[in-house]
Length: 167
Image (cartoon, rainbow, N blue to C red):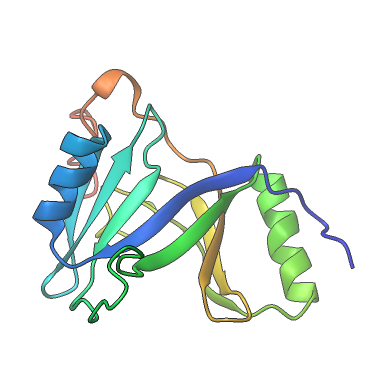
């Protein structure tokens, strides 16, 4: 059975980390990514959006409470949080949502918009339309469209609208 929609690319990945400061230093200082923003998540956690160029994010870091004992040091800590796949536009996103539902895939989160438009706490969100589902092994997958761009190292959120959604 074929797909009734087209995925354009892997858009970003989410990685669970045990020490946000250490990970941010690694991803920015060692790998050269730019920090779009960092926000609290849950009671003791944080999330950080990192980018290679002007897309809002290519990697998202999420605080993970503990690191499992690693007996295979060369493999590293398995901290996959999710894999996000980008579709071209809202129409293709709706096709994907409809196609997966018709095929019996359970949508575990969404559909939603990442940002203050639908999540007032998420001023730093990318504006993407998203939904999440699981593969047969329980890995979290996201299909999204409409990611904002942050050109030329601009501040995000921009000064002219960062206070719009505050109470």
